[in-house]
Length: 99
Image (cartoon, rainbow, N blue to C red; front, side, top):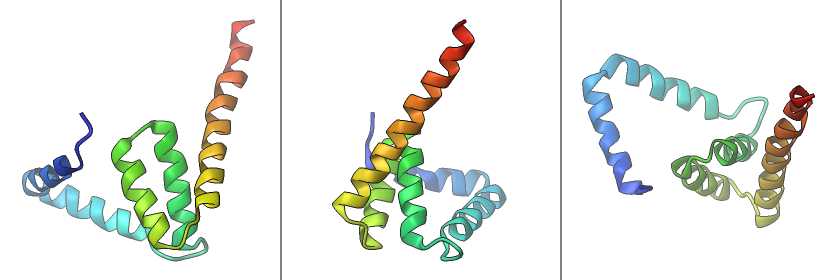
C-alpha cells in the first residue's frame, strides 16, 4: 500500500480544501523551522513519532530530511530506540490496568 508516488495526490486536498491545506502547510513549515530546537533535532523527533505511529511516508520523508540536516546513522539508531522504549513503556505502564 505504501507508494511515495501517492503523495502526488495531496494536490487533490490542496484543490478541494484550499484554505485548510494552506493553513496546514504553513503550520508544518512553522513547526519545522529553526528555533529553540535545531532543524535536525526536529527531524529526529519526527522520526521517533513516525516510528511509533508506523507511518511509512513520514519515516521516509523525515529520515531524508534528518540526513540532509546532518543526522548520522548513530543518531537515527538512538532516535529509533527512544521511540521503541516509549512504545514499550506505554504497554508496560498500561499493564497496570490489568490488575
